[in-house]
Length: 183
Image (cartoon, rainbow, N blue to C red; front, side, top):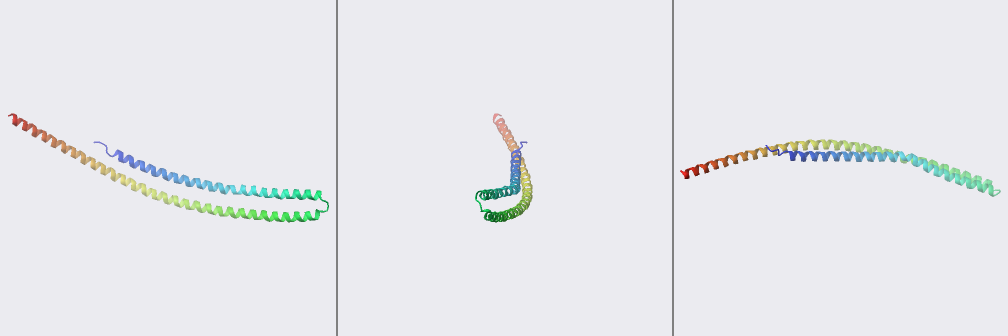
């Protein structure tokens, strides 16, 4: 018997492999996004530190300027001291607000990342469930298709046998007719 089911089975196996590879690609994409989110969260601290150092350098530069002014211009010490005090207050206020702003951003971003992780975990779980049902239905369809092809193959073989029998009968009749004509 000729194997008519091999191409059908191969096609179904290729379709399932494609579905499974697509699922893995989606999962890898989600994991990549999660790693990127973690990297952004991890970089906030270094960004805050770098910006804080920049602000502190500006404060140091202003202090250096005021020190130079104090030593260069006689009699400006009280005014420079007042400016220095005001500058220090402003920088202290700026640094406090800076820290609070980064804390708020980090908290909000952390909550967003947690929500994203939860949502994607739920989505991936639902996708897994749906794909499991799809694969199961696909396997059932494959079984039905293979059975149908096998049934058709059996019918084709039966038909071939019948054609051969009819052909043999026709040949027998022809031979009998030829013998009758010869006799």
